[in-house]
Image (cartoon, rainbow, N blue to C red; front, side, top):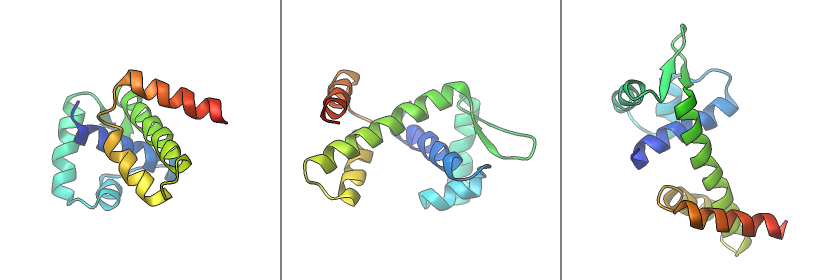
Length: 120
């Protein structure tokens, strides 16, 4: 999956935690994209089996989509925590974590996660 697809899934997960029902317009607002861009991306994600729509038109993550979203979001939180722990301000840490979370190897991420957990 490409980084952009991961970002859509992660943002759907984040919205789902804040709102009980997530609409495409909520995702467009959060990501700052046009409704047309969101529609195209969601169409690809639906065709690939990562998202679905319920009977009311609300976005749902499939099991496959949820797994990716949760993995990326966990990476985001852990990397943000690491950067904050070494003195980076919260806003910069979150922005940098957003860039790193998609490219970091699983081996390196596990080492970072272990380091963060061992420090707490």
